[in-house]
Amino acid sequence: MLLMGRQREFSEQEVLNAAVAVFTERGYAGTSVADLALATQLGKQSLYNSFGDKRELYLKAVDCAVEQYGPLMFAMRNAPTGLAAVEMFFAHLIEQCSASDVSVNGCIVSNGLLENLPDRLVHSHLANKWQRTHEALREQVERGQKDGSVTNHAPSLALADVLMGLMSGVRVALRAGHEVARLNQTVLLGLGILRR
Image (cartoon, rainbow, N blue to C red; front, side, top):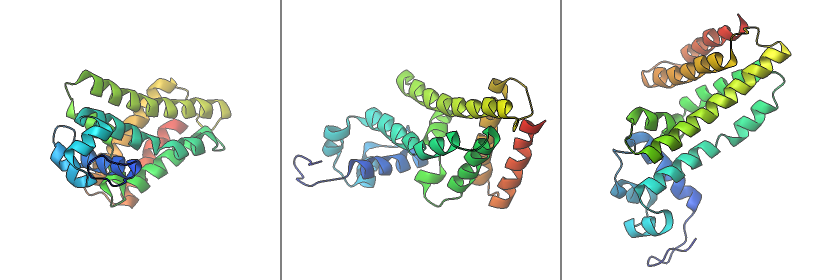
């Protein structure tokens, strides 16, 4: 893509990745256009011309972050059992959370929901992304109940709710300084609910 004025090419993916990192670290309200310009190395006008205002860029950054889970979702659908798919999800989560890059170890969706932003469009967009993860986990719970790998026959909705809570807890525990071995133990015990 060619920017008017600056006359230089830039990678839209790299710009969005930089925006994801800033929004994840500072939150939507705590991020200024100047912060985004500095992180992306683009002028404010160039950002506006190419990505719209701050809200539009945020929504695109959220989409960008969620799209990175595509390969994981594909792998989960191809896991041998529903339980194996859920275990794969949490193994990936711990690996992600222990990364040094804030755009990887944080979650722009969780952080955004915790901000409780008054913008209805932004909140709805974040809630829909959260729901997609919930639905992916619920799908695997139901598959596990059918293939016998999940022996707890409580409603899949409730079990997926528990898994989403476990996911959030793992993210917070990492920020609190818990080591990977401890997180693995937490997940092992948490997933035990699926075998009751």
